[in-house]
Image (cartoon, rainbow, N blue to C red; front, side):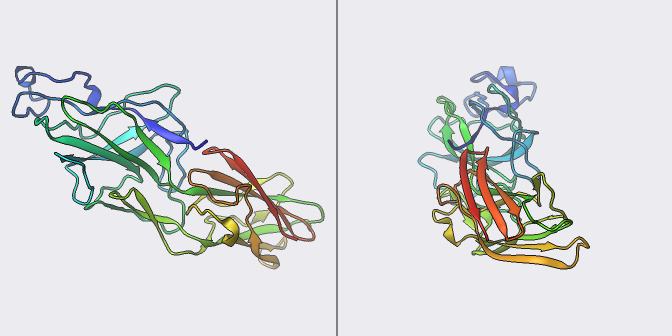
Length: 313
């Protein structure tokens, strides 16, 4: 089952459906032509997600800041032009729905014939004419995307803004197997024939990726491969594929001195139980190093659940 992020949004905690002009004389918010002030609010449930740093996948450990934008239109919104307003929101995950605050607070248009159409995403980058472009040079950026919800001052949004992970995640672990020479260290792991996300096209709800290329797993520390599986490098967020046979690994180990190459392994098959790299799935890939080669197993951890395996002799 795909993990989704459900966010509850209440603009500045405003719970009223509207207030009169006299109630707003203190200047708490804008008053539209008919004297109605209706704050935008979105109801929700809560799923798994909300830690986001610039170099981390989104998990359930800490607040994240997402971008939320609105477009006003009398008919269906095409999302090809500039948004009417842009806000951010800090979100956390809990077992029950919770309110968060739009910053700045936003309001429905006073004209009941004009709807507000809302989308949200992470990383927190403002859109420009329907495109969201972000920096991602090493594959460590987790992309979340919530498709359209809409409402107006008389018919407020009554459905959740649902954020989904749009990439597949790869987490690598290394462990010592039978016959591996003492002191052997992991040096390099590369994923071949993969791509990473760099932008969103809002009109088509599309994540855009780089061309297929070789991607080195960042921050792999040259360290001894021990008898307990240990994470090697940072998690990668890569392009989902329906046929995983073309995605392979390049791996390099060193001797105890940390510099003399002990072995290289090229075109190591990365095999999953479904034969895919599935959107929203986090694959834990454990590389077991033996005297004769590498035994590889992979399973999917939340985000979603599944299993995978492979081996290299």
